[in-house]
Image (tube, rainbow, N blue to C red; front, side, top):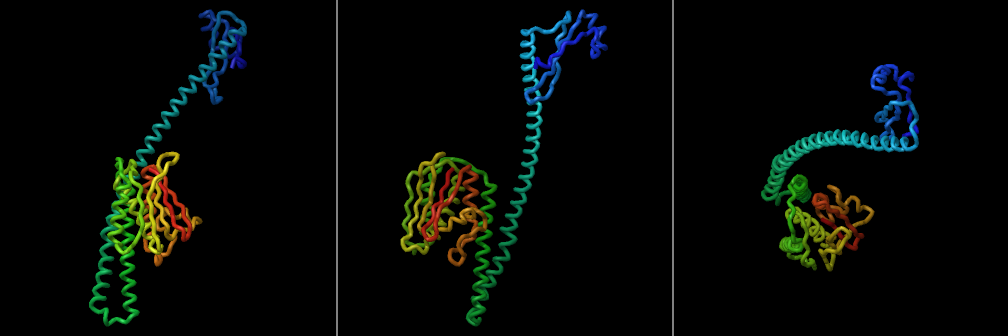
Length: 326
């Protein structure tokens, strides 16, 4: 500021001894100097004004000097900020390249793992189940009841492991699959999912109400998987309800439509709602309701890839509602 302004006599003041001859040759007798302070309080330079006469600046000159110091400080700050921004941008670009390379490596490793799971683990499972089936067919009649029970458990365990492998592969594919957005008729997707559920369990009597005309922008393949899991869960957890009902509807939300799959099935304890969308998380025993605990994790991954949100509400014995946005 002008408050730090000093007046120097070029002919006599010590700091100017080395420039005394040059100043005299140019006819300069005085120098006004003040530090240039940038906006962050750092000194970025010194403003010097040379005069042919030795005198102090008047009030108007001090105001002009103050303005010059302020504007110069802003200019220096902008220059320094630009340099820092350039360095940060370069560092960010370098990190993006590194992270992209790491992600590509991780994707290749995930593909290798998926291949291993698909081929290396399925083969022994098929062998175990095949030999167990052959043993049951050829010698089942002569086996003791305990032995037949053990055999049934072996076959049941291999089927559960096969389901788990299939679900893991779906989760892995969803993680790396390209997301292609387009207008999607969610009502039509839901109708197709429910039709498949009815074909697989024709003995079930379930009242299903799907609101017409529900559309969204998203990846039809991934959203089909999400609805298969949400509606499939509702179908499964209403199995013991005497008057099973499932609805799929939409309502207005602050950021767009909120889609809801609701049922009057087994429900869940809200104390454990934070576990619902984690892989391998189950709030009911496999003996009550079969499953691998990966379906809702898959739903969560799909909705998050669409930059949406998913959450749930429920109560034990009073059904559940799963909401999502896209």
